[in-house]
Image (tube, rainbow, N blue to C red; front, side, top):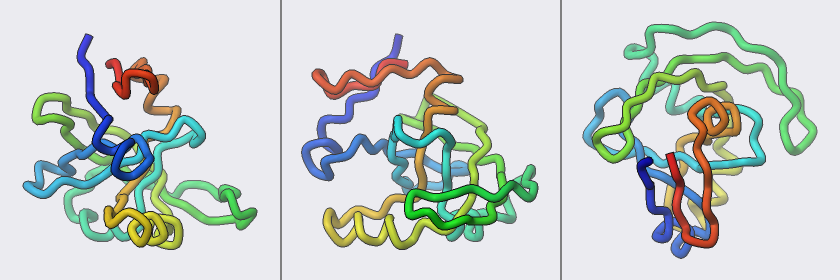
Length: 137
C-alpha cells in the first residue's frame, strides 16, 4: 500500500488537493480529491490547453451542477502522474469550472485545475484518512 500525504494542502487550503503532472508536463496541476463529486472533472480551460495531446474525447451529456444549472459537457482521457511514479489515464468530464476555481484561488492563492471524484476513488480503491491526513492507495 502506498500513501499520499495531504497535510500541507489541508492546512494551507483547507482542502485535500494533490499535485499531478498532466501529459508529462514539468509544471504541476492541482486536483481536488472530492468524495462529494460522483465524477472526475477537468476545467474546460485545461482541456483547451491540452487538446492536441488528448487522444480520446467525445461529447458527453447534460449534467445538473451544484447551482442548479444544466451544463453540456464532453469527456476526455487525461494522462497524469502523481509523485513521479503513479501513472493514470482516466476519463474526465470537461466543463466550465472557473467561477468556483477562481473563488478558491482568490481565498487560498492556489489555482485548481480539476477534481478527482468518487468514480476514480472507487475504481482505484483509494481511501482517505482525514485523521492522519493521508490517502491510502
